[in-house]
Length: 152
Image (tube, rainbow, N blue to C red; front, top):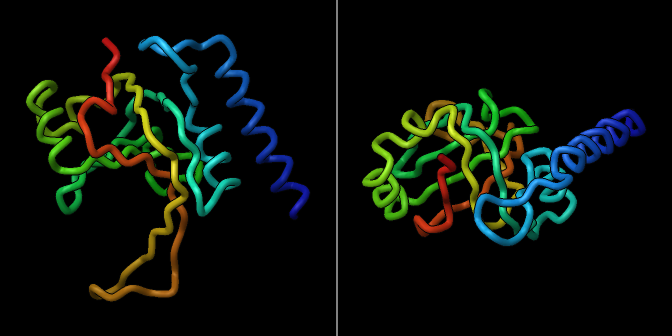
């Protein structure tokens, strides 16, 4: 089982590297890191994060408790998903430029985000109380609007 998991992880890493080869950022500077590479690197570096410029096409998202989430996969619980978590002040500034809610106006659009990919524990709750069940999600937090660029 462990060998199978390691082979799957290596395959994802190689796929991420293949996607990465020769892909320059729309902004000048470092290459864009795809979700598969970000997820694996953040898991390897946990509890520290993996800094870089991350890019993907927004597939889904939601607004939860003042935070806006933009996801690289339709299912935010998918272990391959990279979520961009946008704080309220940055969200309001970005909505002024792109419309609200962001997860609807940016769906299907390519974005680049500067930040740190962090492996984040998400605990399930029942009747408003945390349970002993959880999963991990990889998130990049955005606190300033200049961290996120929508590619036209």
